[in-house]
Length: 414
Length: 216
View 1: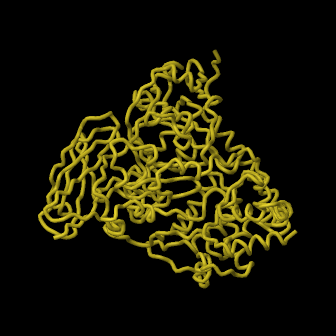
View 2: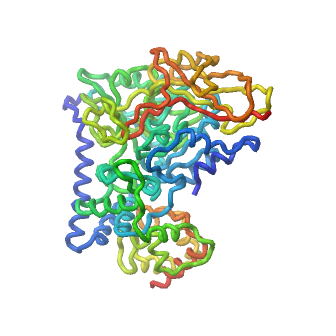
View 3: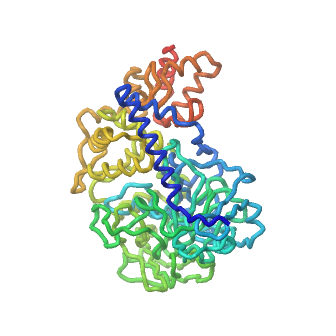
């Protein structure tokens, strides 16, 4: 047994070293030959092993045409609320949020290393995972920036629509706790970091690494998933294996995971220290990130109206069958209220409280309009802690946690 | 280019009208907002080529053209991108931020900033034209080709001469290079991808490829 103390910062140091070397190379080339155009030649000499990954066209061939692309490089795509009217999000409509290229991983050669503050370092293959306690759960996954475009001013970042950037498929996998118990977590373990194999187009680009607190890592719903909706994971969703941290911002769940590192402190890196952070004390809209910023974790209570879609038309005397989904990170949905008068009065929707711990809940209400013309329906969910959705969530510099009351308009013809 | 709004409308049953606009109007914009359909290419102007070289390797131009940020925000964003691996040397930060703020800026009070004079013509030049062709030098500038390519030396991408020598006499070389210009991609010259140029029309593509192949 190797008793050498774990050095969690080692990976980051290596990255920094590579980056320093690369920039030095560019600077030297620029200095020697003069001019930024020549400096570009250093870029052109970057090794070809960075890998362009799987082309977007191949990925999108497996997706519904309603999945709108927000960015080609890196690939991000989602569907708005009216295309979410499923109890389980179909794989073809599950949102995509890559930070780097989509890697083409050979599942037969892929290994998952468990290292850091553990008694036994593990190297697990896909077959090894399949021999463990594989189980299935339906669970929400939502990008931290989902709904960002509803904030004013709109912060930079993926322009997710008010109801884009989330989905609730079924996941198959092994509890991370089972893997960590097999490795034996040592005293002093505080965070668990996930490393993916995805890479960007330049060697200077750091990989996406995020860590989560030990308590969430040991919670049984946190898993290493190998399947989605009863099938093998597709490449863009992290094949052959990915971490799944249900209820938490999507970035906690790392695709194409190849290493799990148990750490004595949160991982230090740009995806921990520069992104996925919110002010500890709220700031006024447009302000900079304050020094007391904290890492994003679980999603606050949220809901969306999945039916009717935008601008539906009904005849007078016809029932409008309102339907939607409500979810929350570390609590559970207590009730959903609907308003047909812009929030002046509310009526309780019927709510199906059954379902997996981190799955969304369906709500519905058959509404008989009393007047004709254009009108709206608003949905507001409340969780078991008594938190309800606000009309305008607290603005924050990176545009995370949008959970404003969702509003859909329809017209009743006389 | 696929666009959200087009897709949102795509599968809405005929009896449902275009509701998206109503939803967007419901949350009335305050201050300068990014355009609904961001321009696919960077606006020509001082610093455009450097910005193209340093930024558009990793992400498409729309990440920039859809944004309206203050100078401080562009600086902060540029510094973040450097942490994320952008190959920007210390002396290049100022010219890049100057360019970004000049063309994609907003004032500190949130109000929009006018584009520098002459950029309106440049922006309309970047829009897909009806099918007519423009002078090759205009095309090279409009689509930012010279940000990454030179006639006789390798920059971020191969020189036009290298491209001509390799594909100029190859069967299907025309189509191959034309496709790379329009769709972008990597592989022929290493891992650094060429950004796609979806706004370019067929006539412009033909002029550009003909011109590139003449650089042998």
